[in-house]
Length: 328
Image (tube, rainbow, N blue to C red; front, side):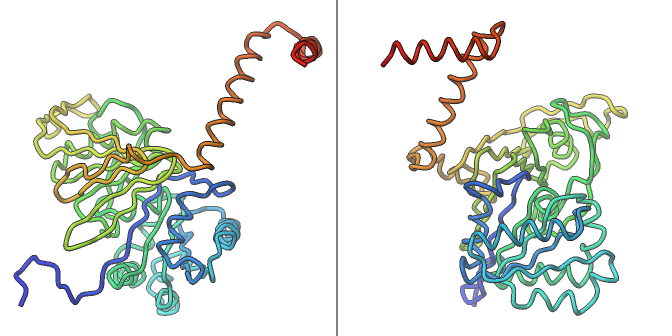
């Protein structure tokens, strides 16, 4: 008989979580979406697609259907409740029964929470995750996976009182608050504000085209970073703050927060709150090396264009032609 709090060795393994910071590449390498598909069963994957947060209607379904088809997914099943009544319908819940992966698109996270959380569909997502189904989501679909979800609020590097509000998420990632588009929209301040007000939470900020992949093993949770950007983890366990008394909309004190900036390949123990691997020994693959070569070429062209700032395009072409002839 196992002790309380220990993992049951006979219990099914929880599914992985693929928490994407938004604006994931859908046209070229598709690194983070490829990661989600692989963890959902690859060519045998049956993806339940929940586009409720999006305002694009059938268009967003068509986009992800095409992308997942390119990645070899066997079937994409649209599950689009527009109200809590829809999300309470057995017809929607039943669509998750055969899914090997569940993916929630971006859009309005407060709408997604208002429609799904606390409904039979929301419970079905949690049950599916417990039986081993991979759950992924981008932007709004990322935020809702945590126990506490950023509802809305402006960006900015300085934490200020009342700069954002928090709503309840699905709770797949407990004890955590997730923010997305993190570096691109400068959301450091609002995540700092949240953990200052709730220092029991771990703050996780995910850059665009980047995924925090969470796996469960022996009762512990490991976050591994995939994609182009970084995942920022704010650990406020020993912080000093005046968030409980700072006046409205004024900067707040947040001292002693431990910051972890995790690039692709890094792994982090969410429960021990410690770095596992830094990913520094991962060599660049052929595709990544080719991207660096292309980037260097773009930089050379940019420098050339800047140097010829006052030169007409025709004069620049003649100059380059002469240079090319002289080199031959």
